Every structure is written in C-alpha cells, then in structure tokens.
Length: 266
Image (tube, rainbow, N blue to C red; front, side, top):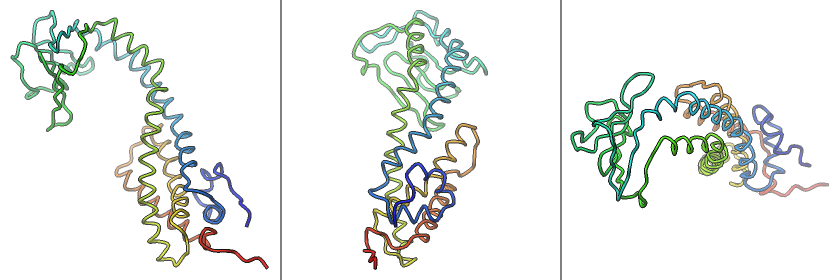
C-alpha cells in the first residue's frame, strides 16, 4: 500500500482517523522525532508570541513601579552596600506587601514572619522557593565588582523586551523536545504491552511513531489552553490517559507493520 499521509496531515487526522494510524505503521519511517520537532515548533510559535506580549506589558506597565524603588546597589569583593536607611524594602505596587528586603546591617537574618520573596544581606541573598524552602546565593560568586543602577536595569529590560522571544523560544523548544522524547520512549514501552495484548506484530520503532501521533491531539489542545489561560485540574494526568487511549486506538487500527512482515503480492 502506497503512503497516503504526510506529517502535515497528522495534526488533523490524529484526532480520529484509524486510516492515518495504519498508514503511519505500514509506510512511516524512522522514529517520528522529526515530526515531533515540527509540531512542537509550530505550537510554540503562538505561545512565545503571547509570552512576548505579556513580557512587554509587564516591562512597560508594571516593572517601572518596582524598578523605581530599587536603590543604587554596589557590590565590591562579594559585599553589598547601599546608601539608604535599613532595613530597606521594595514593595509590591499592587498589594503593598514587601517583595525584597535589603539589610546589610545583620539585623534581619531570615525571611521568617515576612511575606517578602527575598532578603539581600551583606554577603548573600536569600530567596523563598516555597513556603518551607529558601535558597541561599553567595555574592562571592560575583567575580567582578559592579554597581546596579536604574539605568542598567532599564537597559537590560529594553534588551529583554526586544529579544525575549528569540532567547526563551529556543530554550523552551529544546527543553520540551527532550522531555517529549523521554515521554514517547516510555509510551512506546507501554504500547508494546498493547501490541502483545492485541496480538499485533509491530516493532518498537513502529509503536514509537504511533506514539508521536497519539500525543499530537494533546500537544495541540495544550497550546490552545495555554493561550486562553484555561486551567484544567489534573491536566497532566488527563492528557496522559488520553494519549495512551489514542495509542491503543492507533495500535488496534493497524495491520502488521511493514517493518516486521513482508507483503506478498500475487
């Protein structure tokens, strides 16, 4: 049977077509990772554009309210100093709660009894990662002395405003691509159980290709949910079960794979 579908058909037909899954099994080649890279790239484009828009809005409207509160900060040989009465607080402009406390005098030693996210001390900074965990960063890791001013912060923000999509987009794509490959390898292993249960003769590579099609509906739906800021409780679990259902659906739709059988034409 001649190949009927290309990778450009998969985003549509993977939602419902048994014929697509049969074609992928019989006529597809390789692991499907090239297609995976393609669909992730396509779906990340609107997400990164939306993310850039959100970053621009934050930099233009919200960031100045915080930046204007930041004092001139001097780091010399791993030691912080400011020319302001201390403890000095940088507050959330919306709630009035402290975001960052600066105290190089040693009077404030931790983030206990405060809603602040971070504490900048003389030689280290404390940042709250959760309600029970705090991360410590030593200024000794700062190799060169420097002075942090409003002008420098504004220049950094302007650069990030212009380039955030080009910086964060590739990082997100590569990270997600690696994560999805690991996910697909696991799905294909589970798929081999489906193969044995259904008494099919499909190779692991074939099931891996079918897995890329099976997760496609959820990559696409995830994109639309993210763009709409639509929250679904237990979304990861729901998508996991859904992807495995589609994988079972795809395997059950297949004849024996062309990779493991030879078709005799009379």
